[in-house]
Image (cartoon, rainbow, N blue to C red; front, side, top):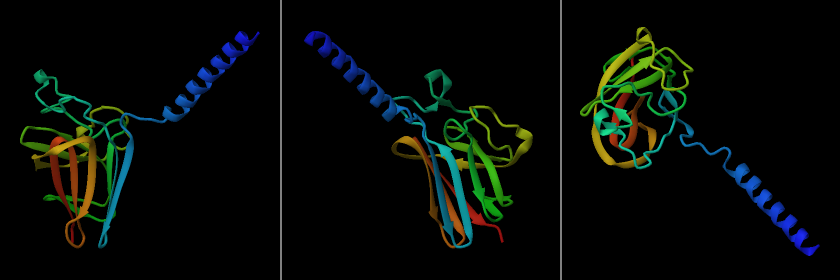
Length: 183
């Protein structure tokens, strides 16, 4: 009788522990979503994106090397949903005039430069390449070598009044993009 009770209690403890573990980790995402926002002067910039991790993988490189994101191929700047950026004013993205609004942002990585695109197609999930006819602008961004960054990170910092610098960092790569109010 006592043996049956102990077995029953043991099974109950295992089930409770499994249920608690499920409840704790059910919302855990390998590439959690994030949002960064910054207001500098009259300029407001926000970016919605997802943050994949390196997890001992080669991130940027040649496809023959097994790179997760091979040079010369579309990258959605994160994972899961497309990365989207919003400006409350007309801006200059490097030297490209961009009207205020919300845009899909993606790149084509290269060894020395990433080509950064803004596209008017929004709300896309997955690694679906954009409709190139909806591209609004593209700029070349030089690759800067950086200390390793485990999880893809986008940051915004004030540059000077009414200007912001957009940073994108992952693995050993950093990209810096000036965003300036277009007066």
